[in-house]
Image 1: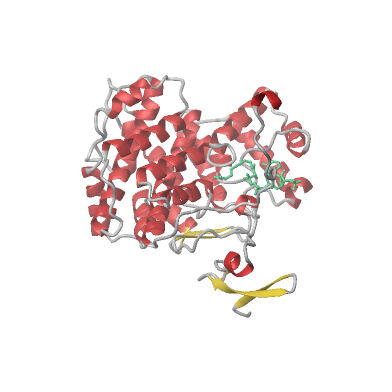
Image 2: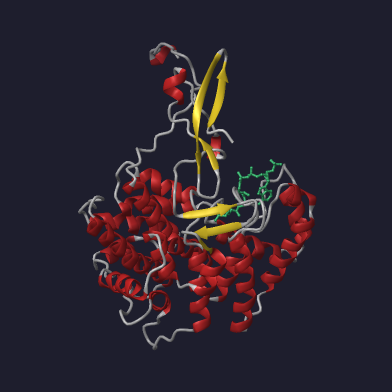
Length: 428
Ligand code: ACO
């Protein structure tokens, strides 16, 4: 293959270099397009064909259903890894040695207290507030409590900001849930593992000793790993673009949380469960809902199906489906909506509408069923996604800042009115 791409506009021809990734993906580098062509730009709504950066963090092949963090396959990471070591690999590039992991955890623990005044902000929210709105606000508020900006040229400063947010974020997650449930806002214990501590902070009751259920701990560990990064998705691109203005890490993360909230992205896990519940309440007629999803005059979509990048099985969905079966069995939970989910999946996999459009179950289709079995309220599902995605967002923000990427500022093609005169109000 040649190393350049040719573009013909009218009588003029232009040449642009090709960029090749380590997995042989190819892009046309159009950096010089506008200057060379006297103002011509590309337009690509939804960025379906546009690469925003070169990145060494996560590789995915949507046609083959492959997902790797830093070269390690998601199947192996979910099977053998722990969330904290996966987080380390995403943020620093390689799986940690035992010593590195121990130091990382110990540094995180040393930064895990949140200023007690943050509780006043939590108090001010109504109990009815959606946890994603609360989490995004609290993450942004951390900027006010930690006002020193990170010197990205200092490795030490960068490291400190990473361990700070890895330590404080789970506290905010737990407080977000506890506020809703009217439980005291607690701190964890330094003697526990990272994921065990998250469970303690979320579920500990003020009047009884807290015991870790290993089934729940292992399931959460796996879910967090599966959600930890997914290259340039909507929330990650948001984190990178907000960070590109040199807004701080916490402010960039807060914006990412808001982006994740939408039902077309991370909010789908809540939407899936609500959809499955609605189908159950309506008599469990999956065929009726399949027909609704296919009806172009009906806004209903089969939540948890389809993906911008995967045109094959989402490899995370395969792992989660198996985990859902195991967790429900181990916990002795019989959830009728699991049957409805299985039914919908079976029908979709042979339905020409879904087959032709390559719509397969995505990561969110089965995750809510596990979260529910673990005792996590539906409105907290997307918060759990954010907790898992945190290391990915950090890694992507760090990569973007270290590469000194320019501020993200797309262009547009203007389609509004041409110049017109201002008319006095009585003449309009
Ligand atoms: N149910 C019914 N039809 C669907 C669905 C669905 N879930 N998803 C896509 N389609 C149809 C579209 O109507 C469209 O049909 P058309 O070609 O006849 O117009 C075609 O499939 C392509 O869909 P697009 O919306 O163009 O695909 P896009 O890549 O823009 O959207 C998205 C991907 C947003 C994930 C979409 O599939 C969707 O809305 N799914 C449901 C929400 C969901 O589960 N989101 C979570 C994604 S995973 C994550 O973010 C963590």
